Structure formats: C-alpha cells, structure tokens
Image (cartoon, rainbow, N blue to C red; front, side, top):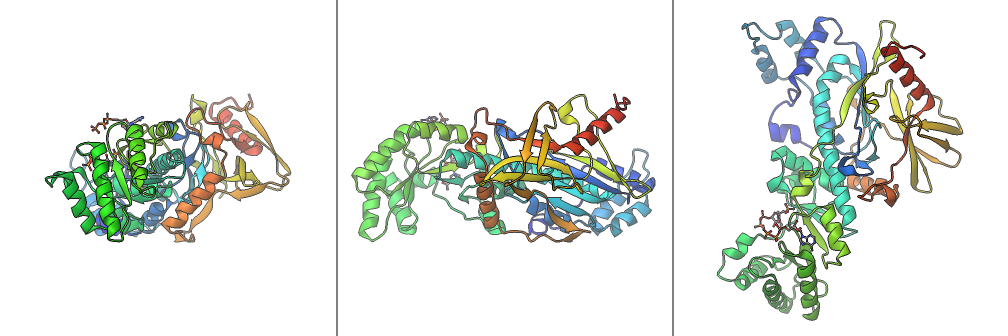
Length: 493
Ligand SMILES: Nc1ncnc2c1ncn2[C@@H]1O[C@H](COP(=O)(O)OP(=O)(O)OP(=O)(O)O)[C@@H](O)[C@H]1O
Ligand SMILES: O=P(O)(O)OC[C@H]1O[C@H](OP(=O)(O)OP(=O)(O)O)[C@H](O)[C@@H]1O
Ligand SMILES: O=C(O)c1cccnc1
C-alpha cells in the first residue's frame, strides 16, 4: 500500500494532536522520553448496538509506523512554531532529537478481519514513552474508522444473506481518505466491490458500476439510451430503469435485452433506485421471467442499510444485488467507534514493569492494567469465550474463571480440555522492524469470513444480540482491583 507517499506526498508524522507534541517535549525536558511504556488500544462498546466488531486498519498502521520519521518539512514547521510571546515553542535541541527519532517499538495487534469485542486489546505497543505517545492519535484515527466501517459492512452483508453488496459510497463519504479508507474497510467487511476507482487501484479491490440517470436524460428517450449503452458495453449491461417510469423502464430494458441476445450477448441486470423497492422489484422479476430473462439480476439502491435490507428480505423483494453508499461509508447511525489508547504499564528505575490504571467513577472507564494478551477459546469451530490475561502468566490450567471487566459478579468457568485456543495478538513489529507478513486484501476479506463463521448467529442479530463473554483471568482481575484500591487510597479495603 502506498497511501503515505501517493496521497499526501510527504511524511504523515505530524498527523497527531498537538498535545502529543507538547507532552513529547515535556517528556524530553524531564528526561522521561526514552522510558519504556506499554499502551493498549481497545473500545468499550460494540457499535450500532450490535453484538460484535470487525477489526480493520492494521495495514494502514503498518505503513504509518514504517514511515514514521520527522522530515525536513515537518521539522521546519515545528521550528517556526511560536508561543504567544514570540518565543520558540520547541527549543532547537528538541527539534534535533525529533530529527534523529526512529520508530523502534514492539507492536502486537489483532489481524484485520478478526472479530473483536469490548475491552480486548486490539493493539499493544511497547517502546519509548515519547514514540508511544506521538502514535496515540494516528493509531486511533486509523483503527477507529476502518473498524467501524468494516463492522457496518459486515452487518449489511449479513442482512443481504449471500447476495452481493456493491459499495457506492465515494460521493457521500467523509472526504478523500474517508472515502478511500471506507472502501477498503467495506471490502474487508464483505462487500463484493467498490465504485471508487482509486480504491480499486490503490488496494486491489474489484471495481464495478452501472450508469446514472444523467446517461438516460442525455438522450431523447430511455430506449435510445439503453441501446447506446448496450453498444458500448454489450457484456456489462445493467440498465437503470427508474428515470421516468420504472415499469416502462423494465419494458425498455427487455427490448434491448432481446436485441443483445440476437447478437449473442446477455443483459446482466436492471437497477431500481427509487420508489417501493419491494413492489417494483417483484414486478420487474415477473416481467423479466415472462420475457425469458430469469437470470437477469435486479439491483436495488437508494439509502439502503442493514435494517432496510432486512425489511426488504422479509417482504420477499426480488432483489439479488444491493448497492449501498451513504449509510455504509459514513456509518450513518454511529459515526465513531470510540476506541481509546491507554497507558497500561511503565518500566521503573529498577527495570521492572509497573502496571498502571486510570481510575474513573464509571467502572466501564477503568482501564485494564499491565501487559496483556488475549486468548480465544473455541470448540468445534464455534467461539466460546475470550480471556484477557497478563503476559507471562502460566496458561496450562485445565480450568479458568473469567470475570467480566465491568461487572465482577458476572463470571464464566472455562474447562479448557478439548478446546481450541487462539492468541489474538500477533507480533507486528519488534524493535521497529516489521516481522509480520501482511496478507493481501483478498486474504483479509477471507479472514473476516472465517472469523465471522466462528460466531453464532445469536451474536449477529441486530436487535438485542446475545453478549459474547469476554473476561479477565483471575490474576489480572486481582491486579486491577488492588491497583484501583491503591489509587483510591483504600488499600485492601
Ligand atoms: N418496500 C420498502 N420497504 C422499506 N423501505 C423501502 C422500501 N422501498 C424503499 N424503501 C426505502 O425507503 C426510502 C425511500 O426514500 P425516499 O422516499 O426518499 O425514496 P423515493 O420515494 O425513491 O424518492 P427519490 O426519488 O427522491 O429517491 C429509501 O431509504 C428506500 O431504500
Ligand atoms: O443511496 P446511497 O446508498 O448513498 O447509494 C448511492 C446513491 O448514489 C446514486 O444516486 P445519485 O442521486 O447521487 O445519482 P444517480 O443520478 O446515479 O442516481 C445512486 O443512484 C444511489 O442512489
Ligand atoms: O455504479 C453505480 O450504479 C453507482 C455508483 C455510485 C453511486 N451510485 C451508483
């Protein structure tokens, strides 16, 4: 992937919040910049009131970290930055320090296309405090959006029950990278193709498209327009039939379909983009079948999402292909995932890791301290539960109790005999060197399919989905409880 160089023509290293730079400066001034720290990236609630989340964005992160370097242009900008009194914001020695900075962290992350849940570490980074801090914002920016859109796509594809979903979002997406990243994530989430040609070029996603109303309107009649399109694309005819009168549009499509057949070609489909999609698709199906076109597909579009698709399926609409734009690429009903990035441990003067916790009045906001990993238990191809545990913990036990991170009265016993186990975090970088072989986009999409198949449909339904158990291993739960007590000054209470 060449997003860094091709789209922005330079370093993306300044794509961070200013406070990360002020902290970087202050860490450097106080001699803490190179202290080793561990941060975790996680979210607290599945989006869209759903029962699962589909991780995406790691390949952007790999690219971002591999290109993490303050370049001359960036340094010049920082050097010229001034405080209100006209003094330089950053002293020259700090600018030199930034210039010499090389990405040197260890990173572990869940692979793209992994089904994930609240509280699981999606990404863990270990390295100099200053680097981990500077990376907070871009890592969150990337994961938050692509994970959200991949999840939305997975829901829409689930609603379509095996029919192809074409992503049509570019024109209404949130800007240029919003559109590109959304097309990528939508493909990972299960869409068959994108209308976004640049996403096709950059990421290798299949591109597809029909034609617009303007094509029809540019001719005197719809029939002429269909005929001219058939001449240009005899193998790719999907006629948009609703510009004037949908039923008449289907009639015209059939007429041109017959002409195509005479020349040895077959019409592929018709598209309906307005009106009652159940009613018109059923009429179109009857007309097409009666005219000898049972294999011609019916494509529907017009502000679709998983709820409308589900409703149209229930109405037995004769739709075979779904074109979905706005509500997919903007994650219309929930515009942000809300993933956060929290300090989990820091190495003290003695070289020991000290777990860190941020106390909150809301128990859902108390982070999980320490260097963690997560393991997924499954049986006969079905996931049973995920356990978050402290790295280095002995994992040979035949039985675990996992404790809900928000409500400690919720516990689950796991007998590990006969269960399959998968470690969710995979090594991505060691000392700044990439050790992970990035799968191509098609393999990532397959990984999503494999992952989604691990989970029961009870977790996938849209209304009140069954909650998948994710819990803390007992020692981690104890550590967190003790730390919270300590920070609240009621040790052992
Ligand atoms: N049978 C149906 N059941 C549920 N929702 C439907 C059905 N048919 C269409 N819809 C959805 O209802 C909404 C209709 O919106 P709207 O009224 O703006 O469309 P329209 O009548 O086609 O108008 P326009 O021509 O401006 O697109 C769209 O989101 C569409 O996907
Ligand atoms: O509704 P969405 O899910 O966002 O899907 C994309 C929409 O974009 C197009 O409409 P537009 O009116 O922009 O152009 P058109 O002339 O091709 O219909 C297309 O016809 C869809 O309705
Ligand atoms: O190809 C299409 O039909 C298409 C592409 C973008 C937006 N709406 C429709």
